[in-house]
Length: 108
View 1: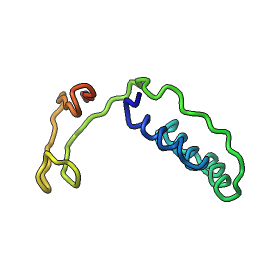
View 2: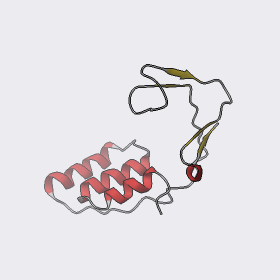
View 3: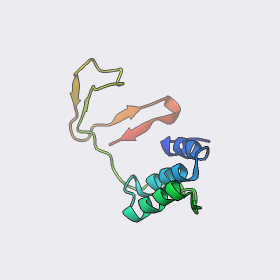
């Protein structure tokens, strides 16, 4: 069952060529901070058609203990609750709830 964006990315990756799959998996594993060495390996696979050893990322739902703090929300595109160029500034200790009732994400 897909419970977060990483699950959707993995589902998409599984239907792609090995270099795309490897790039997505490395992005998930490193939170987007892919090493130059890994990028070179993936590029070589694309350019030369070499084989890649690809393993699915481990426990995608584990809580890393990191905190997300929203300072402000500005309408750019796709934030339907805000009018054009509107900004909402947050204070400390504000809780924002987003999503469907069964998938609420809480930010402190």
